[in-house]
Length: 141
Image (cartoon, rainbow, N blue to C red; front, side):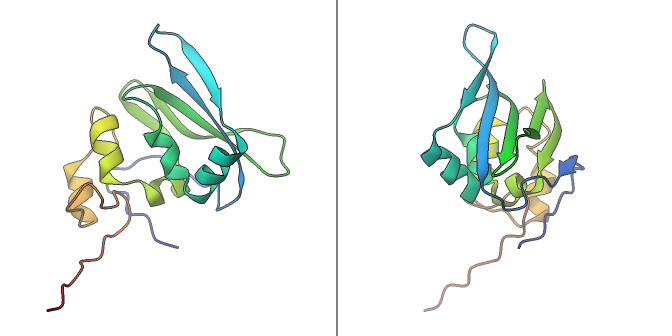
């Protein structure tokens, strides 16, 4: 398991812990009101394998809250919360897989976007991870 490097001081929780489960999102629709989106079994399986992918499924500014319910549980837990430009909390499993290519176009006006954070994890491209150390690839001739 990769260690999270959080130089920007985001509030983190650790609810997912690699568990399988269901996800749902509270998002703002074009008309301006909030709506709850629940996912099918296939999409929940995808998100369980890489929870960070849920943040890339919506347009910029749409996601307000992401909730997770582990298999065998009957309670939904908030694993990502945003109020305006502030990220109030984010689960560690989401941060582990989060790439610069999701943060830059979708969350550039929030706390997630930080060039200082990218430098601290050696992020060079949009395919680099934003919150875990990126190893330099040495090319062999």
